[in-house]
Length: 273
Image 1: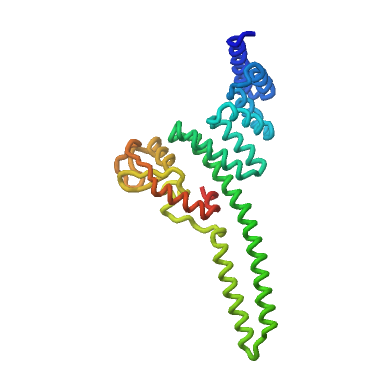
Image 2: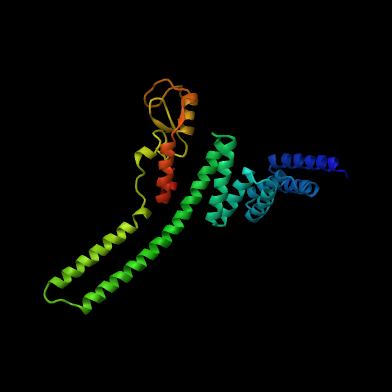
């Protein structure tokens, strides 16, 4: 079979696979994409289409395999990186998932700066980062607790061996233990969820910003929430009620940088959106 004929046959198998997928006939779709791959193994989209079928069947090992093969052919496939990130997340490989989801988000936003799919990927990325924080935070708290107990035992032993006369010894011990407790409370502050500062949250959604934009009135909103307001409510600023068009919105890079810095120090905040 000549190359052009093989390409045509492979494309036909892909189209059959797409039709089966739309009808939720996943087994038939997988068979068709597999035939397309056999004819044209160097076409990344055939691998990502089959991976999508495996994703719907929650066959995450197969998703991972197909996405990795697709990325060997096209490193800028945001679909392959997204599904690979999902597969790694299922394996609790948070570092790998965060890497792939982050790349998928960056690639998609470089093509479509204000794409809803990129927002969806970011939400999954935020989930992965929160789960990573939750794991590392638990380990950190366990180490801190062990160290605190060791320090308390050392202080008690020292005071026992060097016991002072009168009532000052118990008070001295209590002061030392209180100071130790304050030190360890300070060390664990970053792991304790609190309220996210208001200036880092959208005034429409009350969630922490992901894509903040500034209006001519000087108010910052989450882009997707503000665009939804402009589409469904009217062309005006939600707070000041002044006329407003999408073309007037400016990315608030200062707030975006502040959010990134805050999330780096407070991983629990990824779960606040």
